Image 1 (cartoon, rainbow, N blue to C red):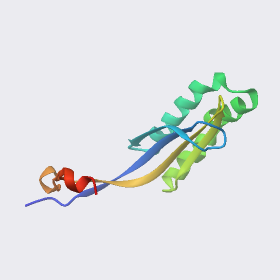
Image 2 (cartoon, helix red, strand yellow; image 1 turned 60 degrees about the vertical axis):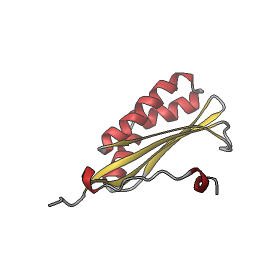
Image 3 (cartoon, rainbow, N blue to C red; image 1 turned 180 degrees about the horizontal axis):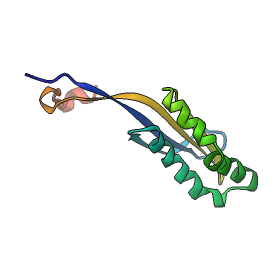
Image 4 (cartoon, rainbow, N blue to C red; image 1 turned 30 degrees about the vertical axis):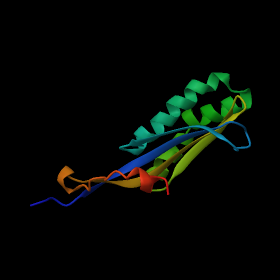
Length: 126
């Protein structure tokens, strides 16, 4: 007998870097899943802190205030309420956004997963 798939609460994290402050062209996207709100926000805090020394004074103050003075606590609280959160800043003529969205991750036993069938080359070109 097969077990039913189980859902686990998780957090989808994305960091999007735009080539300009106007947010026109995306130069980089990184994504990962975190198992709890603190882990999701920790990743943002570490990255923002590593960029802080190269930021202009006002942006540095805003970034470090979010990291150290409670902004990140509000983000963790939002995730605990099952709400998305994010942070953004300008960095050397780029715009960087971090977003975290709660979601349900379904763990399905291997024997219940559907196998992917490769497309024939003729069908893939249509």
